[in-house]
Length: 423
Ligand SMILES: Cc1cc2nc3c(=O)[nH]c(=O)nc-3n(C[C@H](O)[C@H](O)[C@H](O)COP(=O)(O)O)c2cc1C
Ligand SMILES: O=C(O)C(=O)c1ccccc1
Image 1 (cartoon, rainbow, N blue to C red):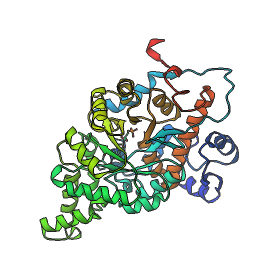
Image 2: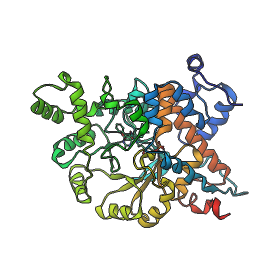
Image 3: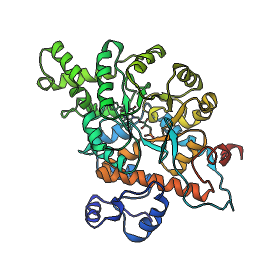
Image 4: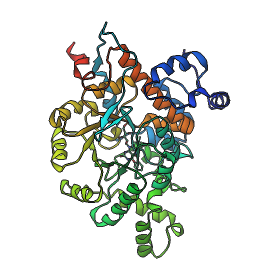
């Protein structure tokens, strides 16, 4: 029977816990589950991944719940994201003389990362917890997980960098239209200066999708009275100057208008073109990754455009409803691009086996989206840490018990999977 966790329990347990807050060595997750998860204490947060959403939602307002858990349209694509994982199964191998802990390190941007997951860019994080992005960026650094910062963050670029310390951090761009190139350049310059080493350009959200839950609540976090999600714009010197020229006052003198104006700047309502990628390459000297790719032809174009990687993603089913599950599109995309791109994957990743399946189908790294947002709502930095560690522990033990030595394509590839409909 599942233990029920209440906020009051969490507070009580927080005071007498020490073990879980230490930083784990990246290869230590499996051991930690046994020694701490099972023996020593009642955990502050549930280890049941399927409960994170339920626990988080108890602590959030109805409009925030609608925002994070809601999807585009009827939610068909979000459901397909999950169903796509169930079409594949991991077949364990026996008597393979496992060496113990499976090696979770992967290579992206020609560099070894200790774990094969990153924090997906999620905007407006102060709606989940007052510490917002500072808490998740600190947790990511502690757990050796790269942090992708959203353009729609409720914390400035510089403050996120400070919270992330010596962690690996990448910047996600919501890309203003070409007439606002000076603002784009300013954001990229700030990100570079603050130690963000890769640029993730989101291509699927030049306008927000049809989201019935948000429309029912009349909810747009940018336009709330406390203006959540506009921190990058409001702290940007180029944007501030332009705002003053345009409206004859400071942002602080007309916050509502400024929030609407910034929103229109980063969600311009029209898409860029493949030719525009050159502009980003001219103004960003590190790797560029295109987020939101869902077909092999676009992946080919990404290779031609000379970017370093793609994120196979449908934005968690929040943009185009009626589209395929993201995992279903991964094999044909990987087949088309081979080793020519780093392939990241997201949309629907909820547990260790999901990560294993996406990596087996050719992804180099998975982005974790909603699960860590739920962790942030459950317990700030510690909640995010818990979710990341749980996913990694689950992944490591799953691989170990399936006789898979590492996440390298040498060991974890499509030969470990079967399609359920072909059995
Ligand atoms: C509340 C919320 C906010 C998001 N904000 C952003 C964002 O600012 N930039 C971005 O590129 N993607 C954003 N995403 C999409 C995620 O990066 C990721 O693609 C998606 O969450 C994956 O789906 P999953 O969470 O269902 O696994 C957001 C997703 C959610 C749930
Ligand atoms: O909600 C989203 O999916 C998203 O990408 C977004 C849009 C606006 C503000 C913050 C996040």
